[in-house]
Image 1 (cartoon, rainbow, N blue to C red):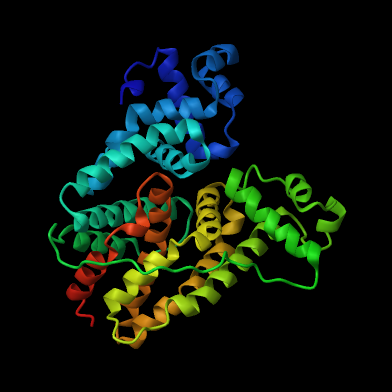
Image 2 (tube, rainbow, N blue to C red):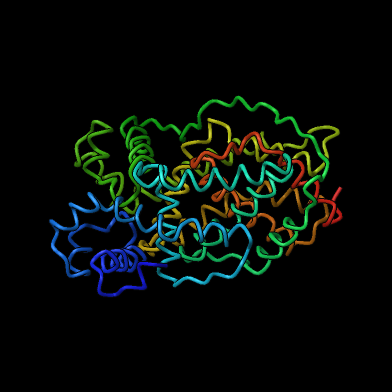
Length: 371
């Protein structure tokens, strides 16, 4: 990486400072003043050259992002400093709501996707799942969530072995569910606060979705919020759990076995359903939760419990199919991490819903001896 090669260059000092601060604090808590102080340059110089924090991060991506993606695609060991990898992961997660970063990253992602697609529809899906698992694992590791990462790597290895011409045409079924509804109560203001929290967090992230902003959006005074939610963390966790319950309720319908459908077909259908427009609020909120956890450790345990709640239906299906419990638990974790990664890819221009997920699921089912 060129910006590590010239320690006396102001350009390199700025990028190195931004990498380290982003890894420690997260993009949403990073400021130009912090970068200028750490790099030993004036704020005027910084603003003139980079414009804002996202401009600095976009420059970091230009220096190192494409190479990082290439190694993820090839499942090659990382050869970059941990701080830089964390920073790049932050960039790719926040890109959907940061246009200056998105327009840089989207080009690299779409280029890789199109290269995979040149080998056929099965290769498109294979590429997407490998990348999704790689991204999901990095965010899970940084967020302190506990998963069986060794088995996750094994799943990636299995998917990578899938032949590019593996059969399995799959016409995605339509899932025209209405938008997820948070559990309504007799307290109209309570419901409005939850809805406003979802909007604020999905558009700006947890660090920027202040209580004051949520109150304005919900059209209530701060005095109305405090009796219902002790503090901001409680509001975030309550909103997350409300979304989880809405997702679980819909999953009862989505994952209900269909007559004559194999497990592979059922799994592929459920993946397509999870990327229906009705789930966008859940996907975006979940991504922001992953994004925030590295710098919000107090949220880790309650959020992990919520994630486990969404796995109940998938786990039951796998256990009913007589899959060993350890493997069934690993598969549900695999689905959780891949879901986050696929969500990121979707927001970066990859047509996730139209991919041939049946090719991947039937390949995995054949290797795991599942009907």
